[in-house]
Length: 484
Image 1 (cartoon, rainbow, N blue to C red):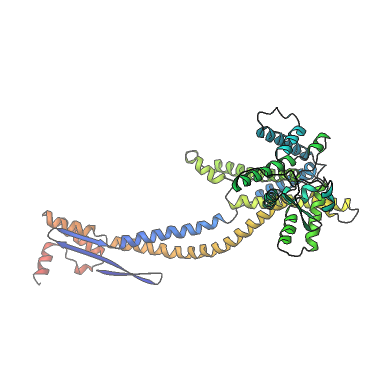
Image 2 (cartoon, one colour):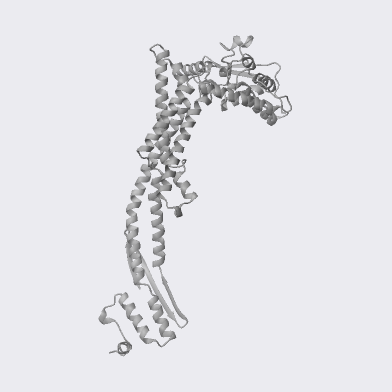
């Protein structure tokens, strides 16, 4: 017995075979397999349609309002509590935190030493413990070689004092070769035999590399809160450069090594970075700028979770609640809705911050734009975080457009597959041979001819046999096989 099904323009043969012998019968069909395959395909299509929900934000007006309010609030915090170096209430707290961590590090390096009761004593110990050959401050002959090198700018101009991968590279090179590299006026300057008493500890290359790396880390920590002389005088002191501004040194150093010309823009940006460093814009102040950005981030995620938590308890019956389902509804990390809210919050923060920085730069410049004042007040951490959000929004937009095409196609194909499944179910019902098998079993094991005939009639009707062709009793069967 053969039947043909047409689905999506492709013919599929449904084979129904029944073999009966003395030992019994054997029945096989591909309808069940086809139905299972179709249902699996339907599941895949539904997953494709559902995947688009993971790319599209579902924010309402209140979400946008709360996100913008968070950004504005943190922008006000940045204006009045961060400000610029020397005028920052939060900056004073950050400076004290770095000073305490510096003393903790000194105690860690020398646990048997007496307690370091002041920043000055800790710095004195660390500067002696982690000596390097590139710590020139512009005194003596070195100051004549490196133009304008002094105690206020040598942490910035010295490449090995930069907290970056290139800074680590030059620190290792300087320690191995007893040299010192500086960037000044757009030039890379190298000093040979920088320290006559210098010797890198270690018996082989690997141990010397370890000591060089340890010296670099320890020396940076000894400089992050200024020098012992500034601590003794009760002044803030010059820390290490901001990791987000050392790139101006990196460009000049890389171009010098590759024999590429240094353009005026490179020099101007490097001079701007140096000017703000001399005003106190160092790693400590960069950390201070991160505080309102972090508050904005956490506040938006908290707002998202609290709103969804209330909605979960109001929409879900008590007997259906579970921790896993609650977390799935409220988690504020991996869904596009909270990411859209963060984009709005950080964008609002940047608008407030940039507006304040532009206004104050014109005030300080007496009506003209003062670039140094603008950069001092510009929260670079906030701008960077907003740029990350914009990149995420752009990526999700492209992914959404691509996924939407697949989801639309899957939606149309779902209708076809559902109709196909309904057809298979109807076909399976018509060819459900349990009646046939029971009919044969009755003839083999009992004399219940009446029930057997009734089942044969039901089977014939199920197979759409014309009424006048159905053999409804034993006499009719005898006449049929007798040739009447």
